[in-house]
Length: 281
Picture (cartoon, rainbow, N blue to C red):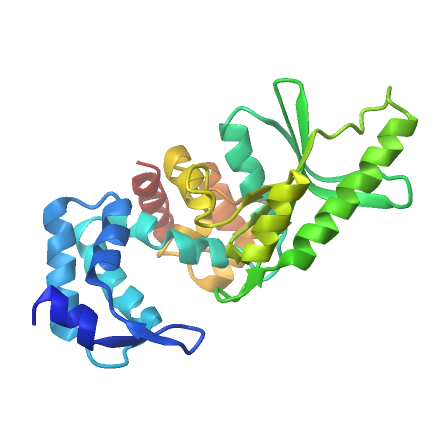
């Protein structure tokens, strides 16, 4: 079966239930983004191609590709499953807020997570306050457990109204430290077109998994090399949640003492910490 026929004839099922043509180039691109060597990318593509069936789910495709890639490179496999690892930061949004804070620290921002700020009408809890070059940013993180759920225009309207309420309070007391120069919204999924249009018009900075083309969440993670602990294949779901509850969100911050506190047996420490080191690179 050649590439053209695969694109034209093989249909795959997305999580939303939508059935779309399979695109081999997208699979290649996602593997290349993981940093996999060219020969490993082709090895994965060839094995996946031999196992394709009509109507296969995108989730099953991902599982197959990850399993094959992991045999080739633990580091590349960890980066390939990065998007799923971000979803695994749930079910609450707090670990995602901390992860966003860590990304911004890497970029040279001073960061506070979960700061309460007085507005003109009400007090607000701001997910992340970031400061750099004498500019302060009010950052709201919208975490979704459903990959198909988008942040719509109501989110942009809501965040902008909060920004304006805080700004109005600062205008009354310009000597206070509540001045924000811009509001941001960061989501682990995507924005609707209306949300983006309103954000641009209102002066908000919107960041999603693949938006904007320069400075997307995916790009920021790729550049930083910061991997969440949920990217570790050696940890069970329960163990990941135990470690997140300790406010440990990055592989580079994971230590044996955290594994011990999570009730993980000492004979597994080496495998887990070795995988973490390989992901960090």
